[in-house]
Length: 296
Image (cartoon, rainbow, N blue to C red):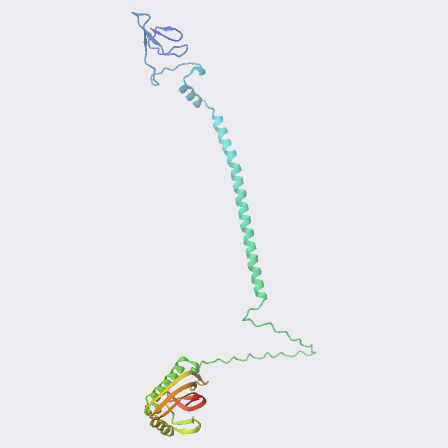
């Protein structure tokens, strides 16, 4: 026998575990002691019987499960419809923003194209530094009989062929010959000095059309008079070549100190020398004294 401790209802069916009135777990009644009660263990979910109880008296986990299972399908449909209604405005706003961005990009591209074309037109309106300025069109008087217009042919522009007159190599060769002339004077080497002269000189210190042999005699006399030492230093050298590149004019300042026993000659002068390229060598064809700065 079992009894409900809540409503005191008794049941002779020992297989029952819960009260059929309020669902309270039943307790067994001991026959030898009517007052003694034995509490049955709490039912588990596995051995819980199926009860037909009112919804307000169902256990919490049963009520929650039943409520979830009994939720109508229309509620889920309403949720889906609500979500669609929320997504549609977002999609509309996104499409509007995308369309605005496309319109702005098209406007900017068109403005840039207009600016570029405008700049090209403005640049073409003005002649560049290399362009020929527009020439005024001469007015032609109307004549009763039209005559053929003869177009003059373009005058060919002569091509300037570079000549060696201003080349570095020609100037270097002239300077090398001038340095050799100065060195031969300082060491009183007559033969080396004479090898730098042409066979005939146009001018030699005031005397024109002089032969190389005559120049050698005068130079030997100077070496014998100033036998002790000869010191020649050139400065302010300026070399210029003619259009053919075979004649070089040399202007220079000559600081000299010639010593020969009790004789001496010191001073500074401005001289002119002319060299011509003869047989592949630069040779002296003229030597002049232009100005004396000082002498003692």
